[in-house]
Image 1 (cartoon, rainbow, N blue to C red):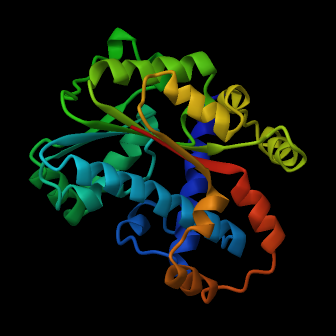
Image 2: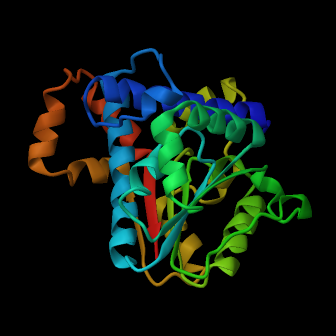
Image 3: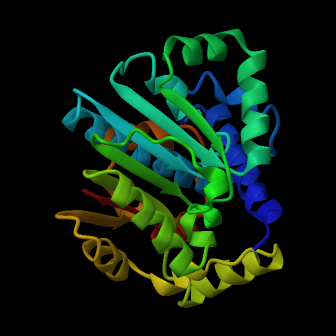
Length: 282
C-alpha cells in the first residue's frame, strides 16, 4: 500500500475529528490549526470518532497515572494528532515521540512553527517532544538512526497504523520498541471482523479506495488480538469493541451526546462500532 494512500487515511481521520469537534462531542483547541474544513459526518460516525478519542485518551491517562515519575509515549503514524500539545505542559516527566512519513512530519512541523502557542509548548518542553520522519516499514534502516530515550515505562500507540502493514512488518516494529523499552505498554485501535457480512462490505469500501489491511486478516478478532500481545509477554491485555466501550460510557456522558444530534441509524451504529476494537496491553 502506497504512502500516499496511507497519508490520506490521516486526512479522513482528521476530518472526522473536526466534524466531531464542531458538533461539540469534545474539545480540542489545537485541531483547527491542522485542518480547517471537512464535510460533516453522519451522527454514527461522530459517535464512533468520539468513542475512539475517549478510549485512547483513557488508556493514555491510565498509563501516565501509573508512571508519574518518568515515562514516554511513542505514537506511530501520528499524523495530525494534537495529543502531545495537551499533555506536555502538564506532565513535566513525559517524553513524547511522534513518528510518521517525512512529508507528514514536515507538514506538522510547519504548523508548529507558524503558531506561537505550539512553538512555546515545544520550546518549554525542553527537548521532551520529538517529531521523527520515516517510513515505519524501514524501522531498522540505518538511515533512520533516531535517538529514543526509552529506559523508562513507555506507551506505544497505534491508531489504525500497523493494520496497513504486513503482519511481519507490524511485528518487527512492535519488537523494535519492546527491545528498546524494558517496560512497554501498547494501545492499538484497529478494525475487526472483516470476514463477516458487514466486515466484507467495509473491506470492499476500503478496497475501492486502494486500502488494504493485511494485519487485520492475521488478527481478525478480539481473541486473536489478545493472543497477539500475550505472545509478547504482556501480563494483562484488555480488548473490547468500540460498541462495548460505548455501552460502558458514563450515563451522563451518554445522555449528553444523545442530545447533540438525532441518531437515525442505531442498528448501523451498533454494527460499525462492533467492527472496531481498542486493545490495551501492559
